[in-house]
Length: 106
Image 1 (cartoon, helix red, strand yellow):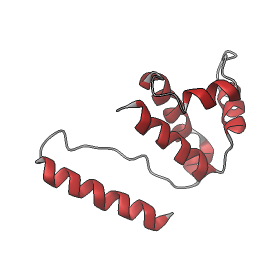
Image 2: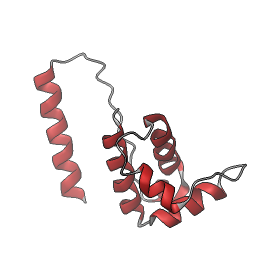
Image 3: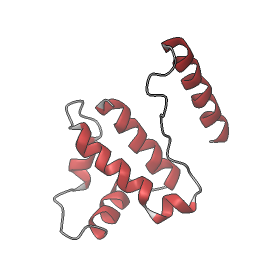
Image 4: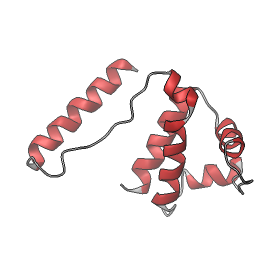
């Protein structure tokens, strides 16, 4: 998954939770066994810079999706299980349907 997609996912999940970036940083630090170097300013840069490491962004997204506040909302982590079993046209149509459903429930 590319950085831009993960950055958008993180921003959307924070919005769903009603969390600011400041709140995310606070929650992230609170749940780590060590003090991270993450600041609100560094997070803002990481969420806008196309060169941010996708692995780091995935860590943030996994943290959000595992947080109890996220689970209380009843949100479901999207999972792609196709593993290239279908042709590209079918996969693209299914993505469009999924996006449409997501927009309707927001």
